[in-house]
Length: 197
Ligand code: TYD
Image (cartoon, rainbow, N blue to C red):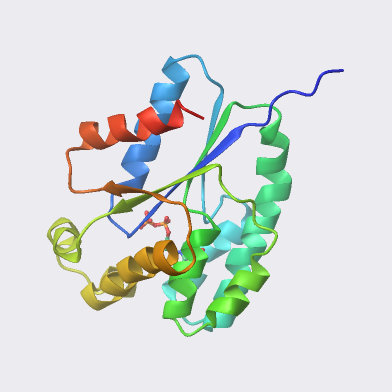
């Protein structure tokens, strides 16, 4: 029996408020309209560990190491239960975030980068990763007033540097997208790369 081609695994990464979710939805709709079978997923996932992360851990109170382990565990369970079976069933799997988010965010809370990398060694490498990059000034305009740590200016500056550092130091082959451009222009840039896969 001939093996069906594996789905293309496409990831959108970027700072909070960069427009990842909007672009993921537009991409999913575009691919579906063009007859492809598409699965849209997020990290943290919707499995019990992912829900615990979103509803409890991200609100604070857990050590950075425990949080890092939960993200890594969520990723492994999500891969086994959802991504792996979907690989043979779908043409595209589009994900908001991936292990790259852990490599950027968890060291900002004091966890050693190499250890975060180690506990994520089984994470699947995307076929294509977009980094939607916005300057912190644009993030601030979009954000408004907040007390949430993830939405503080200094923190987001470090997130941005973290992503750009991954590209520079670790030679991650991200496609960097200027997130300040209009939504439809960004969408066309993204889809033009995706259809080449
Ligand atoms: P998310 O639900 O994607 O929020 P947003 O829509 O703002 O991107 O992610 C929630 C937060 O979780 C986000 O601030 C980034 C953080 N996060 C990590 O710290 N590590 C990770 O591995 C992932 C996937 C997310």
